[in-house]
Image 1 (cartoon, rainbow, N blue to C red):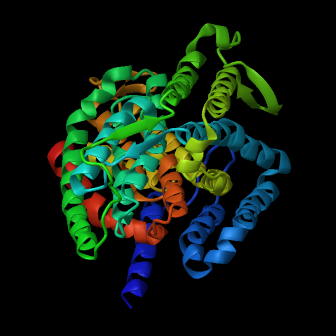
Image 2: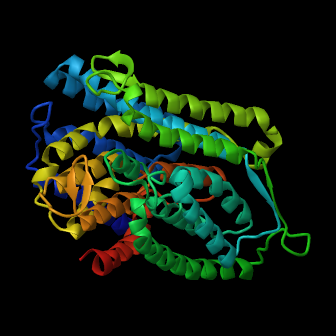
Image 3: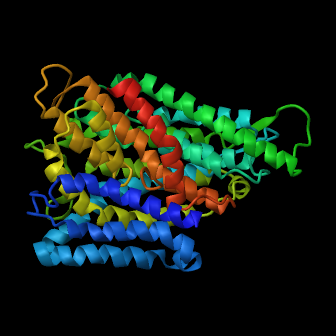
Length: 481
């Protein structure tokens, strides 16, 4: 009965969180496609429900037939959209989604997945509450400098390996997602893609350090909560006779494949270049448009994006060529996690297009004028949609408020309090769901592969509602009012 109540409570919360901004937009948009009807968002909601429910009720079927579900829900959007707006418009919308968003997204994940899989840590440092707090803190601090995805892929296997002897450990990976995969990435444009988009629109590179107080408050509070949860679980494991396999006295830790850090730096440099090169005249035509390779109609693969892809794939290739396969064996490296993410997220990227169209068309009409409103609106939508376009929509909205003082961007003057709220909402609340930020689902998949029973979609949502939402309420009261 408790599971039944929890399931429907979570489902209701998710639907409310998605519906509120849409209802505020009167159920339609007046974007370039005309009035996009609300019912075109059904495939997106359907795919999310499949991701949430089928692993619980039909796990074997879901494991084998994920591509069929993705194709079904994608066609359920593409075909009606083509009927309403024409085949050419439908093809262009899908190609824009794949070329502009999905391609660089999955190549980045693939590159970091490959390179991090060639780094392993061995020794007698066992997963205890203090050790785990230290690991989470290190990963959180790394996130702003090598990206949340880079830090997640670098730290996930060492954390799993050091806690392999424990029975109760899913909470460790949940807080890993909270901190390393999301909150830690708020201090630089490298940390999370929304901040990179802000940098490309005139926000100074180190402006995000304004968020350091807010970030430290959240990190300290979450690590405190984690310590006591982990301490209780650790004592139960010890009481049941579990203990780490430590044969030598002292603390000895050795990292293998350390040269792969150079390839991670290559990937980070590629991401930075993708944000800087479009603004250089050499990569622009006479009209100021970014040069690229035509794909379909107005869709093109830009030269900066192509450079980013080539550098990332080169880093992945060189990583494999220069690393002993024994390291991958020690890491239990397989391709399952990246395959699952690649399949599911192409469906998510395609089917969420109507929701983004509605948001882009009506975001400025929602009457959001206060920092705390920006924080929660940006955050709630970033929990389920791509946080980069969501960030840009609300940054544009804030730039159109006519403020006289604040940060001067290409979108207008944005009050500092508004910019803090939008940035924090987009980065922090990506932790609310598995699909809120790119590395979340990857961490879950790797944990699942290594025998850690991660919560279902709604089970994870209950963790975020119970722990993250109260923290975000404190953020609002202490920093955003």
